[in-house]
Length: 276
Image 1 (cartoon, rainbow, N blue to C red):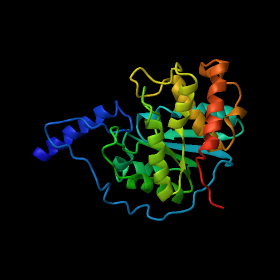
Image 2 (image 1 turned 180 degrees about the horizontal axis):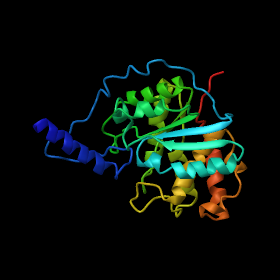
Image 3 (image 1 turned 135 degrees about the vertical axis):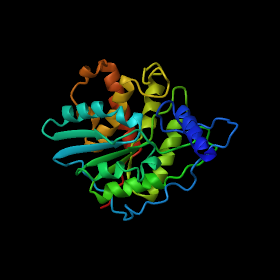
Image 4 (image 1 turned 90 degrees about the vertical axis):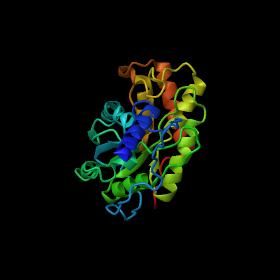
């Protein structure tokens, strides 16, 4: 019973630390020990084979699975709208995996593997790798690598989704990029430089309202900026080729700044290393 109570308390701490669904784990001083997994999930035999990274950008359809927590699910509608707008001759379907959870919590949860195997996805976006917001702890990445392997085994292009930085945070974007590119170095996957793009936009226009009022989640404008990053990675086409984005409640100057930032950062930080 004591162990059960400790686990429940740890869950509350993690939820508070992630701002109601973010991908980070904040360290909060507590009176009782908080159990943090250091070895990761124990059974990851389902997806053991590592395959080359497939380029599905020229597919006749785009079927995209978002797997993560509220940051991933909040992207669905905007990303789908962009793909339909920019690819009117292709069938587009963007779905969200059941539940909000860290990638490690999804392993053998009874629904995530089933969802991954339920359709022929062209792209799987993986978000919610645990990380230490204080920089004092290191969390396993084997679950992220497990989902990358599974996506590639099923013919999908896996894209890692490092979250945008929290409001006022000057180091989180680069730190999360480094963390996720480290994962991709071990198990080849695309990595979306979301945080670096946000840093660039906020450097050029510090008043851009990219954050929700909680300072953690993205506003409507922030979601659009993140979706533009994934649009170019999924389609392989520059965001400048998209029609006018006035239907997304932004003005022409904001649109130009966003597109320029996405294009330049994806050029400087190539998201995918496809094998010849």
